[in-house]
Image (cartoon, rainbow, N blue to C red):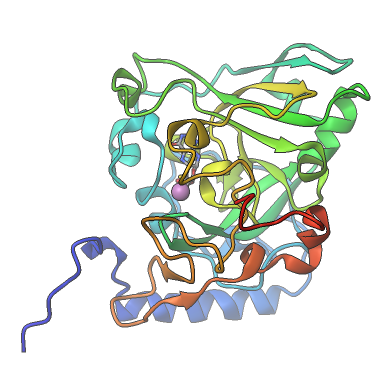
Length: 321
Ligand SMILES: Nc1nc2c(c(=O)[nH]1)N[C@H]1C(S)=C(S)[C@@H](COP(=O)(O)O)O[C@H]1N2
Ligand SMILES: [Mo]
């Protein structure tokens, strides 16, 4: 019998039996570690095989806000990416981002905020204890994977920055560096990539700025050195390689909404009841689950309805997609 492989599933997504065995092992060691506090004891980082070139982050605590789902492999997470600054193919970011230099790094804070200015990476990240947050990342292209992020609460940073009472939204901007980001030489999107959240979304305890994955610094293809992660929204909200954080009274422009407003809204909450014109959102293909695993039903707000639904009470989610 000839089994035809669907064109959008590549060999690297097929999980060999060995990987299932490795996963069971991971779950055993994670269980055995119990409630260990620091990295390596109870975090996903202790179990993964990570190339030595990635610098390990110290003092990472597991977070009670993590999902109990088993993380994807480091390989899945770093070889199947969306980062159009490095090309539109899923393997382009891994292939084309080696020349990108995420250090030194500065972030400009401006708009409706008391602590406006340009800050070194260490001034933004340094004061915050790092946590491992294991979240399922759900892309609007109807695939998902589970990622053990390392990061800190965006709300804690915002409290330090002291927005004014007029600030209703937070906007984020990705760096523009055409020499190091070959995708920016194309007009596939308008650069810089920009994203935004309401202040309530930005302050929500589930929203983080990530600086690492699997206990090491973020690989370039995952948005080094600093990216947003909002787990109840489609992946495109989780903007990478952030150089500007702006506070505003009015809703900021966002890249995918500006590019195709009929397809991508400002809210972009994961919602199986509201289909994208090109991809049904009812189910998702789980990266790494293998050819015969089938698709997994997508959950409202990516499984976080209890925590976030109240942010949208009174909002028609079909119109505000
Ligand atoms: N600057 C920037 N951020 C971005 C993107 C991008 O193209 N450029 N792609 C988004 C999309 S569509 C997804 S699904 C996630 C993917 O994150 P990952 O590659 O770390 O899994 O990043 C998001 N952040
Ligand atoms: Mo995405």
